[in-house]
Length: 549
Image (cartoon, rainbow, N blue to C red; front, side, top):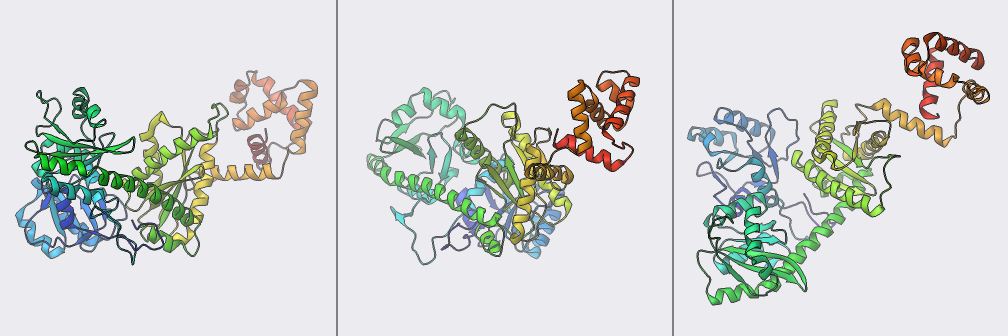
């Protein structure tokens, strides 16, 4: 995705060689020698032969579930859909006899080992494919010889100083970045990188031994022996340095080492503390700035208009048909009022989760909170109803994942073919969201394709309220009659309409005998003057009951 700034050019693509170098050959390696690893990749695709996902033009395609018998089919599909793409398959699915086919088709093939899950691999690859350039005409700001906030470059620099593979972690033991040479570490380190999180049993062991407590109260680097019982999950010793800014603990740097470091290297490690702290603060600040800039650009994009194509390019949105979805919290008369802060916190949490869900399902998709609505922008393969239905399924799957932890609802607009028309699908999504928010429905996802007339009813309700419309004279006569005589003519008429003229079921719903019900219905016509045989009259009455009473 292009960095959202007026002075920035499109994002710098990462080469296959750089991906292999950064992630390590213990994870990925070329299927055979002689492939062009200088080829650039700018997006990740989880392959599904039946999916209609729009692929980036230089995608790295993960062959999920592709066995040896389907590799050739995958290669041909990739060669047909993109120009010069790259494929990742399981090592067990590869046959050396396919090398000629690969060369003829112009694709590249990387292999991964069977013990890695595809989701782990995708999570590990995603940050490596998001390299961004400095502003045009400006040199990158350097801190200690490393670009400001570039934690992966920083990890590599520290690895060179310590001569050991390094990870940079936050306070929750999440892996923010890692260096090359991770194949020299133990399985625990590799697992932490793939999961982007140190294993719970490893952190539990470190807590029980008081390592974290000591780490965060000293400025010195610590040498940590592996647990004697093996309970902690790592077998190589570690050297760790806590990183702080004043009294705030920012995280830590961990190096896997075969034995204690020399006093000189431990001293050099300690001297890196301030530089690493500045990088972590810069990384956090850049993330916050990018979030704000991205929100501003997304707001401009959702407005549509002549500049939308340029804004879409700056956001990294592919030139394809697009659908907008709108997520919000429901309207409920029974719900306890929430504070504005609590609602905003909930929407921020949902927005982040929806952004991850969409971007992992469709390259180029994103979500952002604007006001009290989270908007999702989803590129689709074409402008068909099937494409809109796929976005509806994405929304449904997302709400199924968040489950009952949230009462959020989603409205989905129709497909527009160009970014300049995005305001149209945004408007449709907002109208559908209003339908989903209604306490009258239990459906949590509304679509202008699936629920066009239900959405229309909400718009009619707006018109009725704006014009301060009241029931028609015949219905007013019934209401006045019931008030004067303590009658039941209005409930009788509503029950008859609700049961489509079935006197037996309508009578049962108001707990009277069918003969009594027929008598009351006759009185309805006499008092009001309504012709209940007229279908237009019945429709008018049903709308009045729905919108006014």
